[in-house]
Length: 311
Image (cartoon, rainbow, N blue to C red; front, side, top):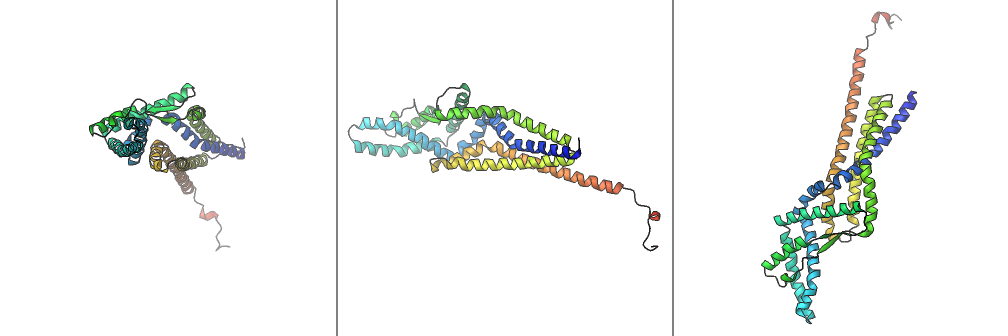
């Protein structure tokens, strides 16, 4: 094969391989990171101590409790509508403080881990079973412990807080089908995209006329792919937080996003570091080989060279 054709084919294969690198890393992260319950729970576990997450949980659980207990307050107080409002206003701070206090205990960390495991199992089962249904999570275990704390503190009407059906919607039914299709595509791509990138890169290096240059180009392209992936994660974070309807929950959502994408960011930096290191190594090897060729070249015979003096 002529050298120009080999170089052109090598460049095309390497460029395609480097283009697949960030997409392969993203797909593998979804297929082998997010889809693994153990890894997901491990990534989310430290957030139990995050103040923003604790505040968001306290608001969500507290509002759910108040929505359930408000009708019971009105039944207890009968026609005294103004008094019912006053009682709800008096109970709400106690509920919110009790939930916030509960989020700082070891029991909350246990409930947080169990809740995240239940959420992950529910979403994963919904994505795989093919049924059109909303995904919800029952907060009854958390509510029961909050109710126990309120009752021990003699908070009015705490004994009327229901714990049977305090559910929070995790995934609406209308979004489930779209996410299911994307998940199945990423599940397949998580294996084949990295394999394809490796095969294309190896082939591109093998057919190149100068393999050192081909390896350098592959390394730099890999580093560029890692930088692109890192930029995509940052842009995705900004867009995700911007779409939230409640600005008060953005710090908690940002903490969750950062915890889930920590592995992806680590992989991005590894791709950048590995690519630059290999490219630098190839460059140093090229300089070393050039110096060896220069030093190994035979010195010219002075007797055979005409001198300017004789001329």
